[in-house]
Image 1 (cartoon, rainbow, N blue to C red):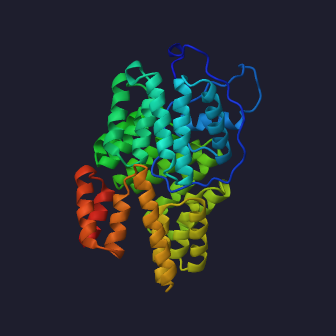
Image 2: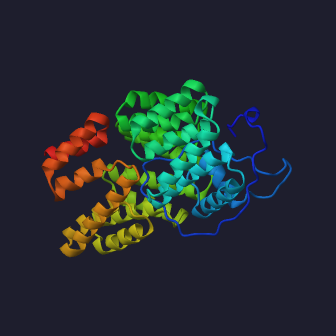
Length: 387
């Protein structure tokens, strides 16, 4: 628990199980939600009861780790019920905002972002940033990263760091923000500080990300293997295995990527990210029919624009033009939804335009994006559009 006890004027609310199990699926991850948003459990030190679902989700979210769908649903329901009766509980508003963010990650539904923003801003109204509401400030930074507004994320992360340099939860936000802005030296420095302060899942995931961006692929794999070893729940382990699959895919080893994606799905069958990854690997291995099946299953669980684009291109390659066009139409609908919810999908849309629409328009939009975010992802997309 990183929330300073003396800052709390009243005991933290109890956490109870009020949610039902759902079949909420995971989505392509952009970022993990990090923040010290743990709820103090209403139990004594010698209470041997296992944690309830909402407590497990609160712990995972507070440690910057993925939460199981059923646990997350319970946490959201629990905090919403609590806050209906206690609207001035800034800590619970911050927890709820972070839980909404994790819902967005698992479902790829950007409609959760305005809800998260509203909850986090309410927390800051009750306890402003200048009074040390680090939970909500960190949550706002994580939200900005999820929307790919990396400049705003950097401001929130640096504000927390300026007020509390030893607060580890600021550093995952900073690593993601600096990476999105293309400031890889700053990202590496923030990652190294994070590893020193709090080695664990969140730190190892960020280390792998930094090493990958620097081209140190072996180090990236080792760091992600450490993340898998540090995982304490199936959802966490599945996420690390999915990321290992992504690293294998990027180095051109489709068979190894498939093995990692399938391992993730065995660990957490609700992992739509891994299902989409498996579809990609199957397509590369010439198993087009199975790939189409998995893409459709993944999109049924989480409407990820990138997966719609990949499925459309696979259908095109299989000579199924009308079905491909339906996927491209779905992609534009998803991007419009994301735009309404404050998400920057310029890179994805630029790549789509370069291949299937107006390359000149793609160059213009990606050039503007490059002026804001000088990351390798934007450079790669702009280079392709120019080509």
